[in-house]
Image (cartoon, rainbow, N blue to C red):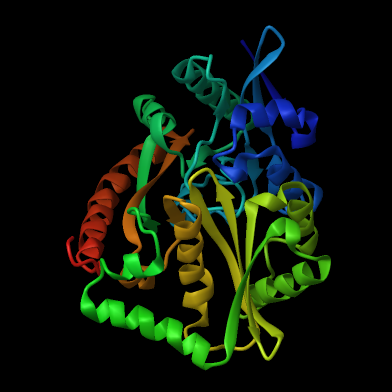
Length: 377
């Protein structure tokens, strides 16, 4: 087996890459990664230098890992700013660091696309050792893999990487045929709350429309982008993604996009964008210009639940943070990240920190579950 580095995803054939990735996780698809790079959202200039790894055997691609050299920690959603400070206190440079993640996307999924015929554990071990060796040669401080799942996560643990836990909130479809079926599983007070919130949207004269990405016009994408951009500007920061990125996604993977618009007096007043992959809906972006009572909940959550129920999707991953999701039936789930540090002193300190943090995270998850609105917890 041979490991090769490439500095742009267009250096690997899209069909070959996607054959490894499959259809269940849209953010590993060649067209998504290509849209990030060719729109300029991901580049050395933005602090995300692509450095992807390919594994070949007999000139056949058997595995691929999106990988980036990072000059900062923005857009990751696993926060290491305290680690940066501690590293610098030791007189060391934390950046550049090496990152296996989907830029700006805190959604769990495979971080290495591997052929079904290949030995997954062997390939993961080879890739991790390759990254360590290259990091030492190139004076890269550390390697981080964010939001991995399943056997890949367990392989990282078995290889002795430091494992960090976090919590997100996700909704699970328990055989609901209608939204009312879901409401019927909630206790009385929360059932009334959800009904009241959905009713308030209607009473404000707001109508909701769901569109497949392939049916959205360029004008509508520009309207959506104005809303998305406003979400960041309200917090005094520029958006991570530009309009070109969304237009590229619409052109190459529109059938995997769900765009929700809110209209009042035939004018767009808000919008939310989700991605569809396998049995999961991934809620990603939202925005509005004017604030309307509970519109955020309707556009970002209830419309997504409607879509999952109508289309038989089993899970709604609505992204990072948001304790307000608990009362609306989103359950706490554990997320993971894996970390390696070249400096042994720092690696030891981080390992000790993560043991303490894990206890707090697990207590938080258990406590959050106590506030779920279901009648039968």
